[in-house]
Image (cartoon, rainbow, N blue to C red; front, side):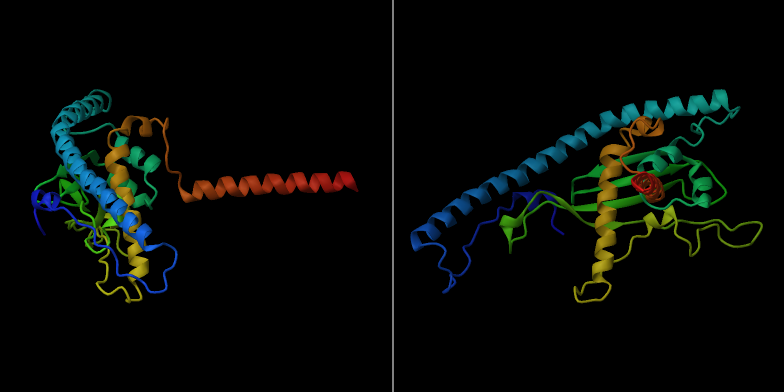
Length: 287
């Protein structure tokens, strides 16, 4: 893949599509004018590409300043744990802080076993890279625990920042096109002599093993995998842009963008029950 510098320096030129003999919507003069207008539109796209590059460069500059604040946040959490939980280790966090943040913000499945493991989660950070390619990492930092040896679990998202040369006018900004997880080094349970991983059950930690999109679009699994990845891409961006900086108000419940499907279903069922009761009462009154 080309470097970001070379990628953003490349400018795409619009080429008018071949004339269609049966296209009578526009006159030849109108077609010529439309081609000129589209070329102007493409110039705005090239400006958007350059703007996006500058935004990433500025975001990278401010990332260090954000991390200073996030370090202060972690220190406050560590001090709370140390003073209020009788824990003398300075690298511990407020009990269940990040677990509660994820439960208020994360739409995917978190099992009871996941919750026990996520109690060891002490920080979540994002890290932007804009050279040689544009990508960002979501880093989950863990205290030493009985489940795996990793201190950090990482998910990486890759962004495409250039228009498609075959269809440049369809460009609608930078987009995530690929993600990569990491290997989790699960410890062996002393009780069962088996690895502590989630096994075949759905788990939060499936997040670090995204499926691979088949190269062949005709593959029967292509649509399903693509849908999973699109959801994954949205989630990665959501963690980066909202959950990490707004963690404290997710923790307090002052913001909850996502509710679990079970909560939504419960609310829906309750509403339907109330409606049914009202309808029955109305029918009784009519009788």
